[in-house]
Image (cartoon, rainbow, N blue to C red):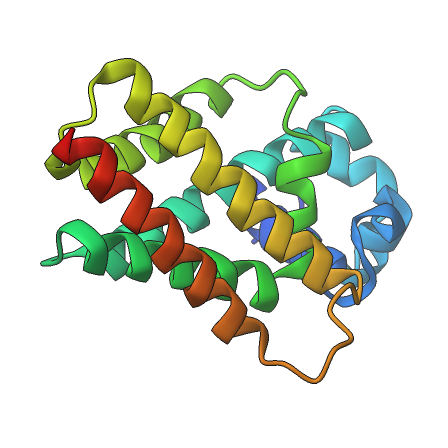
Length: 189
């Protein structure tokens, strides 16, 4: 029987906190049970083992990421929307390092809600790129480029890949402005 007050959402919040504190690889059912002050078998009332927990954590991460990026672009369009989305994305990765790790390490796991939340993120990117009039295929290329750029910066920063005495955010905005110039040139042609 499930412990009073313990539900799947509470379990995911606690798992995300553990992952953020120590990294996704340190997240175990035993550590989660200890954090929640329950016995490990009690967790099976809410998840079907560690792979299911990690897949659910990926979905949870994506919901939060969509929420943060969507909030950042409300009332904005064009370059302002892209810059705001990218800043929010990178801030999310910085503030939730273990949870963000679930996004890229567990993204291929099967989960009933994963495709829907991935589609939400894709649709957000599609909407903010719509004003550029790039065409369907070109817009998808641009989304891949932006996602690769964001993920590259996020993971390199998480792993200490930027050691020069140069602000990472300055680099991010420099590369983004260059990317945007290319999109403007492409949409003008």
